[in-house]
Length: 483
Image 1 (cartoon, helix red, strand yellow):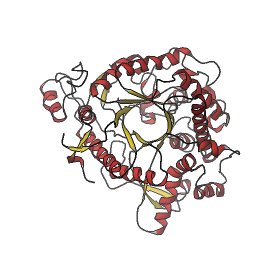
Image 2 (cartoon, rainbow, N blue to C red):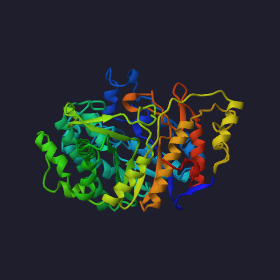
Image 3 (spheres, one colour):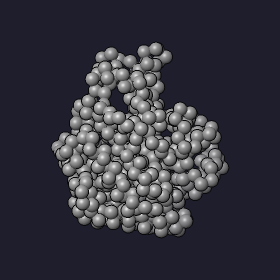
Image 4 (cartoon, one colour):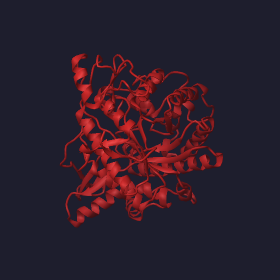
């Protein structure tokens, strides 16, 4: 593949989350999570979908690791389900829950896949929600206890630990708009939750350092690139405020040990500024080894005084093509995000911990159609593990040229950022598998692997073959260059 070469040792991986793929919600002592409760509440998810079975990864993890191995990637980002480890959120640990992750790590080691483990990807134990959840300051301490237990028991087996995935989503979609679990709708609560999430992150970093855990630790933030809809001053101010609420409210405490003054002033004016104890920001600002960046799209914003629930900021649809989620495809935004974070905050290392797209994927018949189309991106047979069932031309095929184009153009923007000095060390595509897409249930497919949910059969998409070539050659084709 002639094109743009990535640095030697660059990590190519895939990402998943526990509630979205594991299933087995009532097995081996796992406790109830807030997403179990939320998804079983009528009207909360698409067609009442739940994660009860999801991709059945709890039983099929060996097959899924085999898929990753045949894809030729080098790293896997997964999340650990807190209610599997502590069914009540605290107290007595559940050994069987930890054993599952030990078995997963055994398989990853055998496949030479480097593990990145997320400690919290939104599945809070329901028992802790019953005690106030993230609005309760004690939950930050309970999270640190859980994190310390897991990191100690998996000592030396995990290359990198991620404390939280997208705390903005947890706080705002879960506690302000009610679109996600636990389904609350209160701005004051949501703002307080942001502080407790960040505090719990800092306490987990502190435990990691004090325990001398090998490896490195960081946090993953969803960075929402914000552009003003026009050059009008009021739209530029609206864009700056939106950037503050989306991004700086989380970046600045982690990297500067302080909340941004403009957003703090807004929250104080509204009477919703969080309660912060002495020493909290010093804990939150403890140095991390890396920042995980999740990037999907941009926000185009304008000032609208009628948009009182969003502080006078209205988000408009961008003019570009959209994914099945309705998100504008804006690859150059990834370059802007990476270079901007590098310039302003200077993290030691950056990983793209999520990037990908949902499209309306369809299965085709097996045989000649599959043979005809897999040649476009390269067959998944013949990778370092050799050919295997599910990767041959006789299997059904999912043609997803839109996803290949989406990924290729974003890979190119990542390459550009590296050329300009950004310490980008790896790229995790979202996602390995089609899965339970939160409130969207099973209606949206992000996977490189198609999941036929009634049978749980895994069918690699053409994007999986494309990604294998990128990962094995560490190169992105020149055809993806440009805006």
